[in-house]
Length: 281
Image 1 (cartoon, rainbow, N blue to C red):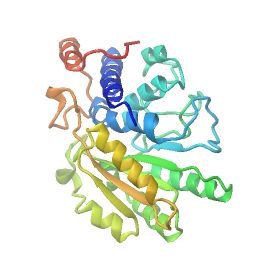
Image 2 (image 1 turned 180 degrees about the vertical axis):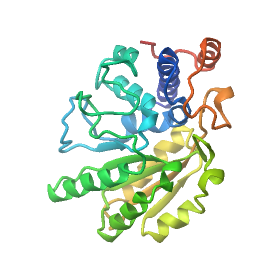
Image 3 (image 1 turned 45 degrees about the horizontal axis):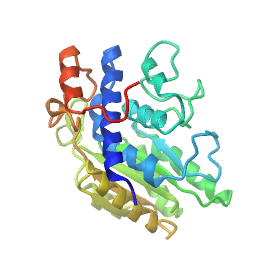
Image 4 (image 1 turned 90 degrees about the vertical axis):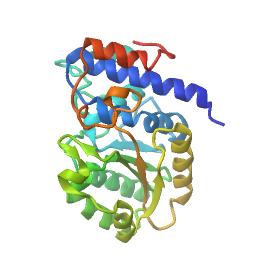
């Protein structure tokens, strides 16, 4: 059984990491990062079979791809706190010559990152290729992908979705962060996505709804359910409703913090709402 109290403490620490990283360089994307903290903590601590002794090929282990690469702060925090690289390296976020750039890159050989991402709409295609590779290699491990809902406005996603179901790519679990917000406003205002569940199902995907994406127990339960549905001929999607800026009251219920760093006073307030429980770097 998962230690829920420990995982909740880790979520708070990840939020602190995110806030301190973007504050230090006055740059980055805290909103979506904060909203996905529970997902990442659940994925790397309870769901995936992964090895911090990183092998770029990912043979005989589950593989994760972050498609909406701008939420790199939460990715870096969880990778570091899962043992992929020293937690102290989080201090170098977005600095010149750092391995921790604003969008994940591969040229510096950062453990845990298998593909550069941030050009939205491409992660699913890459992940499907990886899933097919595992099938060809008789590797029974799984592929996990996180995408943003605004990212679904990119047409390449729908080609990839059509391909995955047509070719029975059934070793992949794709989670969509449905927070309803993007950099210019709500997804409804920018380009309405309509009924996402109906669209995924019409493309032949098994589709689950996770209405409490900021409750780590619900996240774990839904991901475990998704794992039981793979290898049945169809790809699996999870529509995960989250709140952008979750855990920091003045960042929630607005798109304003999609890509804006807190000032000194705002950082102090935000950290006070997420008391230290694991240990700052």
